[in-house]
Image 1 (tube, rainbow, N blue to C red):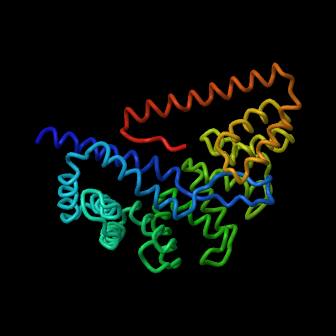
Image 2: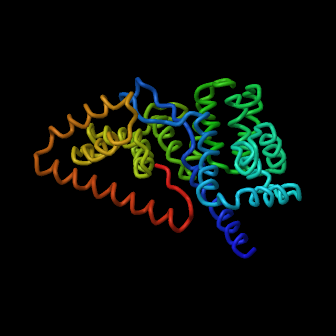
Image 3: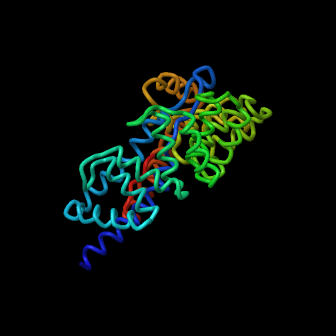
Length: 317
């Protein structure tokens, strides 16, 4: 019994930390091909559903396989007693078939029970499900309702997705001022994809007066979190002296990092920009920057490893 309680405690710690790490990476950016030569890999909303669910499934299967059915029973008991966090987690287990046969309709039932009592993660999950029509009839108005509830409680991924919706006019009247407002709120919570999109709006003068300096600051914040689109755009701003001083060494540094993570669709543009920047440097400068990129990447791996061991979760770049 003591061992079981210990494992459950570990699971709860993991879930709490994982939710915030995972949600902080969820999202899809709206960078146009016309602006800045096309940029980064960005996750679709259906991809967010998959991210939201699969990390818990993987952890449960790999780390608590011997006790998964007991964990499900305990989670169900807590959910039936009215624990809104347990209701959400139980919904995730039903959604994946972890510890129980998969049943997405039951998952949605438990999500709703939790969401109606104000649990932000459950509200966000329902927004994703209704937006994508995952096991329900697609209903963007219903998605907007749940996103707005979560966003008004300060949940950054929901704020970000509202930014996406109002920017694109997907199911609503397009309103770039509202998109700007929601992106800004999410960016202030440190969401890199929101910082990237907000930077684009400042750069293009969409929903706000054009401000290259502010765009540069936001791209830098997102780039330092590993956002490849922001790394590319930051390199571009250094390469042309836009929003900051001209600096080919910094441009080459950020282009190199972007090349490692950018999608195949955009890799040619990124490589071309990297090559153009490298031609402005001598061999010694290029070698020094390449070593700095290697050290930067090693530092990120070390940071991720320490976080994994202490918090029982995975760092998603």
